[in-house]
Amino acid sequence: MFESVKIHEICTWSKGLAITRDNTSVDKEIPYLHYGDLYKLYDFRLDIEECKENIIKIDPSEDFSPEQFLKDGDIVFALTSETVDDLGHCTLILNPNDTPFITGMETTLFHIIDRERVVPAYLNYLFQTSLFQRSLRQYVTGMKVYRVHPRDIMNMTISLPDVSTQLRIVSILDHLSNKINLASAINDNLGGAAVAS
Image: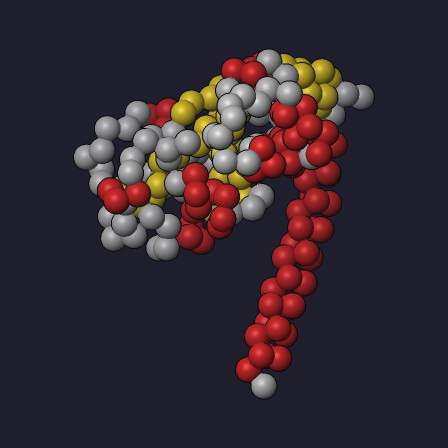
């Protein structure tokens, strides 16, 4: 059985911290998720423990707010883009140790407030579906730079199965995703070996 919910019933949102790329460095202290890296480097999920050494960082003296810290199970959206097709790219944050981690300029953080109704990984997969992405397109504004306002997403209605079903679906999709990533890594290695010989 499915429950229809408005996204604002299960999530809150906040905008990322605007800092120029010149004020970031891998040698600074607090990991910072820049929207360009969100597009290029991260797909369905970002595990801060796996990328902490290489991700760009900012100084702790920057003027950030508590709402801009990325917590375990948060979802980060890119809702600004030069192409409509790139709008809506999102990534699930894995941060079980609560490492200080700031969402950056032109990103939007969705924080799940009702985990009794929704599993963060399930919601992230739902946000990736073509059905959700098509629904998102109706809210696009702009001509050279395209945007979707988070308030419009908050008013969208989604259907949620019960939590146990969500967990089963996540388990299946995670298994498939891992197999795809493994196959891709093998192909990359084989391609590199063929070039070397």
